[in-house]
Image (tube, rainbow, N blue to C red):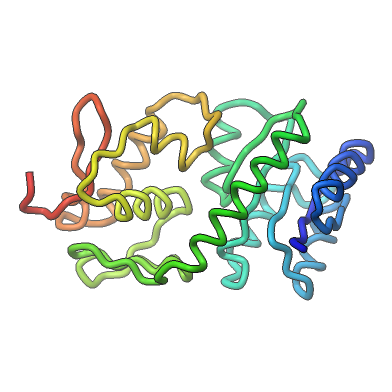
Length: 230
């Protein structure tokens, strides 16, 4: 039975989520404060966590960033569930380490569907090869270490996920909508300049040779190809 952590300071919402997820067959541990959840995580690794952002004490985003510094939790799916619905907050949450972002009010059926989707993705990733090597770039899915032309590259979570998706679909044209849906979530309605900004920064970090592998297909999206390919 998969264990889900729910970190939410509103008693009614916390109980609603706990009861609903238990009804879907999950084991649920619910917390009012991020500090209590982080302490429990040290000895009881959950399969997925749901975090509110506005919490008493440590806020949810700070807690998520702390979790992502722990190698043992690097691939644990995290969903943000919050009333903060500005594009800035969504981008900050996803770049800060969350895998998905939902805003309140919400439906428990949709929340359960997103949890199932993230757990399936995690299961697939755990059965795949850890090291992905394409052209001059080497990517470790487990440790999230990236080498470009033999040099270590420090990437944010979203930059890493973008690079991984492009490498897994190398030589194919990946549309902008596909990237936005896969990396930022299927209901992401922010402006596409968010994607452009991340691609630009990713190219810069990969250097001249690695960055040139990410080709723009004008009006469509991007391809990951050998430097000499057109």
